Amino acid sequence: MDKIACVEMYHVRIPLDKPFYPSWIPGYPQTENRFDLVRVITESGVEGYSAGPAIARERAGLGTLIAPYLLDMDATDLPLMQQRLREMSYLGIRCHWIEPAFWDIRGKLENRPVYALLGGNPVPVELYASTGEVKSPRDRVSEVQKRYEEGFRCVKLRVHDFDVRQDIAQVEAVAKAMGDKMKIGVDANQGWRVTIVNDAPLWDLPRAKFFADACADLGVSWIEEPLPMDDYEALSALTAYSRVPISGGELHSSGLPELKMMIERRCYSIFQPDACMAGGIGQVMEVTRLCRKHGLTYSPHTWTNGIGFAVNLQVFIASGFTESKPLEYPLNPPSWTVPKRDGLLAKPFFHDNGKLEPPKLPGLGFEIDGRQLRKYGKRFFRMSKLGLKLFAVRDKGIRTALEIDRNRRRFGVKARP
Ligand SMILES: [Mg+2]
Image 1 (cartoon, protein in one colour):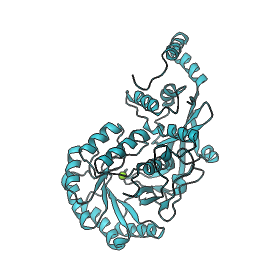
Image 2 (cartoon, helix red, strand yellow; image 1 turned 90 degrees about the horizontal axis):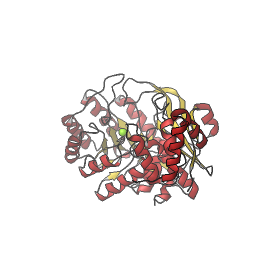
Image 3 (cartoon, helix red, strand yellow; image 1 turned 30 degrees about the horizontal axis):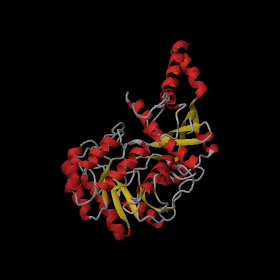
Image 4 (tube, protein in one colour; image 1 turned 180 degrees about the vertical axis):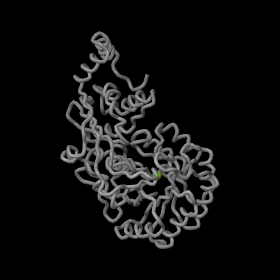
């Protein structure tokens, strides 16, 4: 047992060298790699980290919700931590992004990487270069050729045009230029469509089938999120119809229950839950087991930031699916580069010829560079156990605060009622 002594949260903003135009938010120039970092410190001084992508300062008040749920709990009791996150979610705030920090702590206490805790073997991982912007066929071909020269043998394109013929033209240009040298995946980013700046195309089943037929003829390896993430019926119909495997499932914030149902309905052939977004490492590991049981494949979404990549790398290695499909490696130079993506990590995850060796460090496999955190991070929340007592007195008054404290100590803590 190692109890949680302190919870800290940082808002991190790493400026990009050039604006990045993500295909999934048409018309929006992203100028920073922006995320919130959580640091959980135990009584023995072990630090666990995790991170969640941020739009603005939407988590500014979140510390006063999460710290009282977590402080003085056993950080190594992962079912208990899952239960606490579940309790936090009842009023609509889902915090799965915090859960990997407890695996980080447990790995550091046992001096083993998280994938080893989960029963995985230290195998090298093949990566695919995941592009992030929509491009003209000509620009896309030259981008893919660069990735090929860097050692990648698999790439994922982004399509997001109102005219399906433009989408197909881009895929066709790359398929013709690269031949058998490069496997191609295509992400339509229809799962969680965003129209906050510009409008975005909205696919339906006939368009998805038409696109899937064209991709099959061009030898595409998988099509990602061609339909809304909760249109289960259409997804199952498309997966049954398509000659190209259909993938998705990255941001299902309700986690395992919904993903289990989608596996049973065969909504996708390849499931891609992101362990920072879709239930934490514990629930996503269960998803990987269900995929295996049902003869399906798993390969996670990783496009958030370097810490999110590290988390999903651990789960991918643990899953035993490393032979089935390469792992997403977000890369869109000159804007979204490895130093910017992994800007807080002491050692960024630079690929070697499109591959990565399994991390050797205990826990999630990275160390935070304190200098970089001071430079790009701003701490906006800190609460220790003493801080919680003072907070409770201020928030509830001394009588109620003392009563809660007494009751809590008398009944102890349980993962399950
Ligand atoms: Mg995707």
